[in-house]
Amino acid sequence: MSENRDIRAIRELAMVVDDAARGARAIPQLTASNKLTLADAYEIQRASIALRVERGEKRVGMKMGFTSRAKMVQMGVHDMIWGRLTEGMIVEDGGPISMQRYVHPRVEPEIAFLLKAPLCGVVTPLQALSAVEAVAPAMEIIDSRFENFKFSHIDVVADNSSSSGFVTGAWHKPDIDFSNLGLVMSFNGVARQIGTTAAILGHPLRSLVVAARFAAEAGEPLEAGWIIMAGGATAAEPLAAGTWVENEIQNIGRVAFSVEK
Image (cartoon, rainbow, N blue to C red):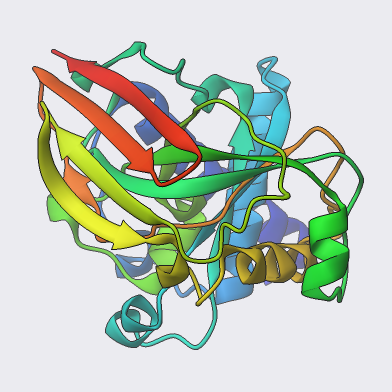
């Protein structure tokens, strides 16, 4: 296959993924009819986000995935995955989302980093922390666009690592010790997931270190002003209309949104 044909094939698959996300429509796994590598999957992801940028969206950050060892084992992988965040994915703290925008929406409690300086390459945790302006309680709305919520590792990456939306709470200076803070994610005031920020690779800062490495490998340095979602601290919970979703993290506050039909 020629290089030009490879590029066309990547863009065609990116359009399939992009159309599914825009139309909240389930699609077959890409790997069911295409022989794809992990590198191909990231190129499909890159091309699909480029389509969003062409429509006027702006890149605002990165999300990290497979941040727990148990999830890596479950998926048969040895490293984390990542996706790209755009301003079209931002959900206002306390605001609503509509189920009509999603196929299989789920939510994960997380912690988010706001960068004050660029970050890229192999860095130490201390160097990563020096680039952080603030931290905030956060949640990510993940939504696989694949039929029956079944997919491979490669399919997930091509589908922007399932990233669909994110919400952040009030920002706090990073001088607080956020390595092992208790958190509770609740639906309509009833706890659904209880965990700790330490579940994110033992310390959320390690997720930022890996993000810098991934950014270098992709040739897309993390930029000042970007938001980096550290990854799920617990299992994800399916969303349904009529739900008030809240994540409260010890010492740094809470963040919430509502789910409408």
